[in-house]
Length: 133
Figure 1 (cartoon, rainbow, N blue to C red):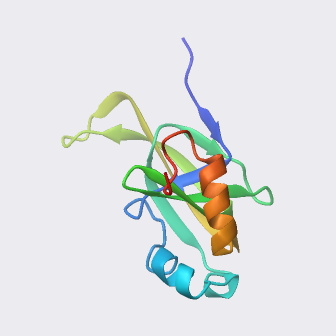
Figure 2 (tube, helix red, strand yellow; figure 1 turned 45 degrees about the vertical axis):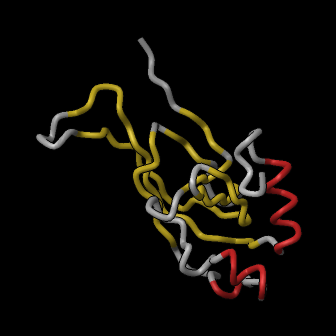
């Protein structure tokens, strides 16, 4: 018997999981590019990322992707500064066998310019998952 741990180079999260959509707002970014100064040095939290995952740790970057309505929107690069893998429990506190989630902290180290963001999103998202499909 073994265990399944996925290794990720992409932090793909929804707003509910901790993507800072109040700061990284696409409509605003398209009108007036959001610079790294808006997030530099800030620590963000992600939570309830399904599955047991290991992300590359700082100083190695991960790609920061906002999952919006099932679609991928690439925003830039981040570094993971901590992560935990925990069992998922039911309402009574019992482990749902085989269910895990990953939580952690990250810093954003690069925000893509909007033209590049659109290109990367189209080219690097799985088929049918690009925000601009």
